[in-house]
Length: 293
Image (cartoon, rainbow, N blue to C red; front, side, top):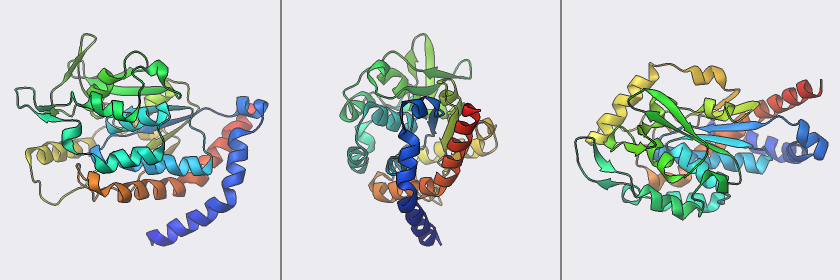
């Protein structure tokens, strides 16, 4: 069934690609009238590699992305994309990633590991060290563990907010930054649609990565992850009402550390995005007509 849907989507894409690109670029007047498109990327550890497939489908279809908001791995993928890193290189890095690339086991009262290595990992993806150096605007979400609210970072240094956004509670030690104690953005912004809206997006495409994973937990990390996933399923889903289009790649069968499954994860993201292309284009055209009126 999935193969048939993918084949149909590919055929549709071949026919419509030129029209999409013409619509997305257009002349100067058309470009000004075009609605601003924001992309909100959810977290999900290795499952976040599916975001690369989503971006590939958008690139091939000529769907414009004017700003990005990311949570956890969504922030990492967003930083690479917004800096101009090729999707091929991004996939290559994902394929070779291991926990040791971004984490180091240092058991303490606040967490089992530190993600300080994330700074060197980010440097592999982009030479940019500040938001101002990015080619496309980016918002990174993190959670203030004391206030219980989402904090969005849009300027300043890249590494501290990124580390904070990826500081999974219980696994990684919280990040102290600008007077706040910060942890993973997924606690308050599982899909950071608001981060795209505050950047002025007229249309927000949200990418959600549902976790399923292994049948029986293998480690303490699995227990922590499974527990938060259960909580998330029963909490507020305001972001669903805020998003215009929601893409949900079929990644629930992948474990949090399945980096070796990069090709399959990319393919899942690409297939889901391709199936959503007609809906995305419909929103673009509708918004463009509203602006013209």
